[in-house]
Image 1: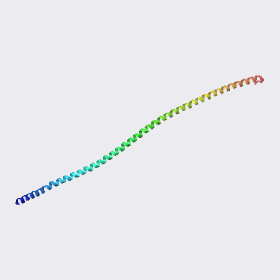
Image 2 (image 1 turned 180 degrees about the horizontal axis):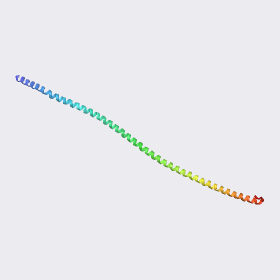
Image 3 (image 1 turned 180 degrees about the vertical axis):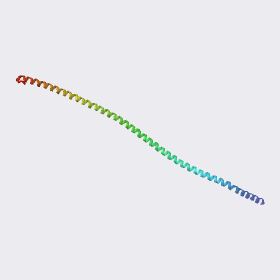
Image 4 (image 1 turned 120 degrees about the vertical axis):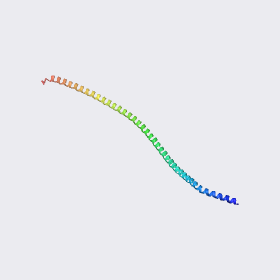
Length: 147
């Protein structure tokens, strides 16, 4: 029993010495574990923030792309509309030019007809004046008047 008692005392001494040494190492390990947990929590928080920022950036990018595609479509439709209007304007300009040309031709034809009628009237006036002169000459010769 004495051996057992000594053995127990040695074990208790050893454990007491160990407890003196162990808490310093244990505290350091606990501090390191606590610091590692804090770093892990900070990193998890940063990852969550970056993930949220990434999701927001992707959403904004998708919105910008959608807007870009919409504006591209609008631009394309506007260009097609402009081309249709240009074609329509060209057709109308051609019709207007044809109309003006035909109107000018009609005016020219009217002017030629008017000129011809005026020429005929002038010729008729000269003819009537000549007849009148002839009639006056023949009447003055017959009447005997000296005038």
